[in-house]
Length: 187
Image (tube, rainbow, N blue to C red; front, side, top):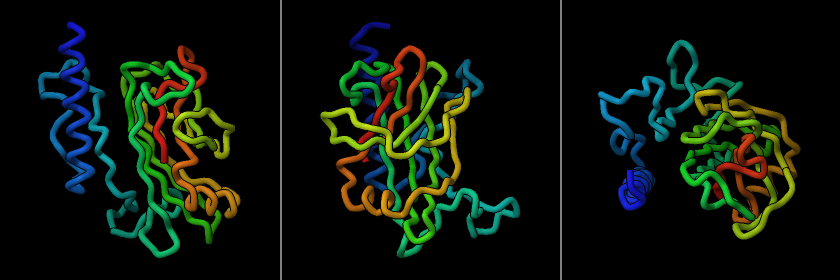
């Protein structure tokens, strides 16, 4: 596949993600067709609410993305081009969805990444979009399929700081070929 074709495909994928965000849709089209050779391929926009095993609409407390006044919901789209100082993985992309619960000192996260070598770590870092910064929160590491989710105890002051200055924090996922970060997305 030529460079121009790859750029067109990446541009279309980005357009689908933007369309989903603008319309609020959890489905903006398929990332692959039914004849795809990759049977493990998943739709990165599949960010369904975390439901209890009995499918009631109350979320699990272990992965709690509840909608309440004290919870701040964040989503960032990650790619290798956003890595600083770079380079990140030029083909990698992903989505991180985060719920901040300062009143309970809890942070819940769901991460999906694709087109990167197996992840070795994921973090929230302090740093504006043009700088690399220190780790503030260690997140669950995506598995071999590029998926991670969970909740963890985080000091409520850190959660409040993140919520108050989103543009000063970013999420990134690391792997062996890109130990400084394969993909990144500013909060």
